[in-house]
Length: 389
Image (tube, rainbow, N blue to C red; front, side, top):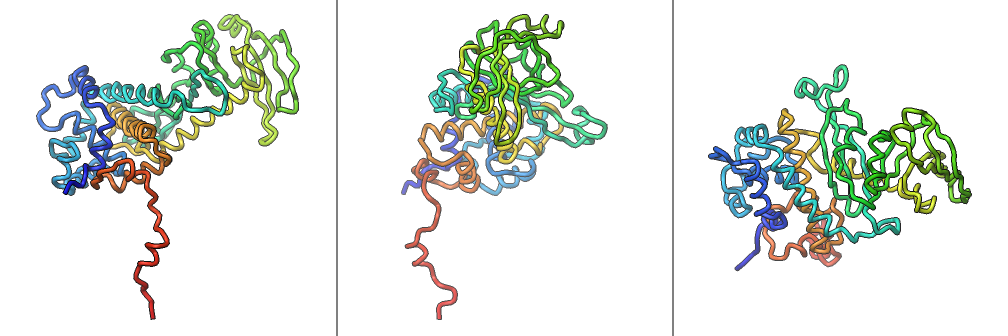
């Protein structure tokens, strides 16, 4: 009697095999490879992400315990700790970077019409970075302070579907604004940033490219006020002005006018000064846009809790980049299947179900993920009573 495929194999069906092979060929990932293929390395690291493994030895031990299920899950070679460690250290991390971009493009197409809190049709991005702390004795190349090591993860998040469409690594000493040069701008899109991105020489490129930015202003920047518009103070707005920079050096970097909006958050008793080149939007829309930046903070918190990007299996930059890009490649297919299967569960719930059922068989993948796992009253009535006198 047919009992269905392994859940892990059905999940990997959402990962395009031919695109993966193209990325492997591009960087000669299997040149002089005799044991562990790139595909098996990818599957093993995805398994580690989805089941929350603690080490490569843990990964190899658990996979060996599965016996013949490994083959039906897609593995074509035995996974050993040393071979997997060597692959993470030496195999080009760009294979998994390029493949993650393939998955990201597919996910963004699926979430292109995801509703937002704001009635804007254009794409809205949030740009920020998060620091991942490391052990200095194990990662001396990532020295950041006197006795600490860390790396920065710069991320551009598409707020429709919370899809990371741009990720870069740097040392913790690198300024956040330096990543602005590496972003490919989309005319008409909105980019939301915090105070770390007050580099107006670089932000001038946004205006010249037809893209819009909303950035929180540092307190030490001065302006020459031009046009001032009336605002509704009951909404929290305090001012809506067109200004130019007073400082000669800053004005040289950004000679054009810029919109300066002051907003007071009554609930948290905080005052925000926001700068933008979007002169066409209503004044209240600007602080509402900036409020959406909080989603990238939640995204960083979420991935640190549910993906293996704080504890690394290797010590070299190549191993770390490989692990992070495969972690993203494990996260994005779950977002893809959520949309394609029209699942009502959250990503957190889907990942928790997958973590304990990856190597079970099912003939209806969608029903398995969507079903309610709570015990019904009828099931409780059929249970034997331990103390039934």
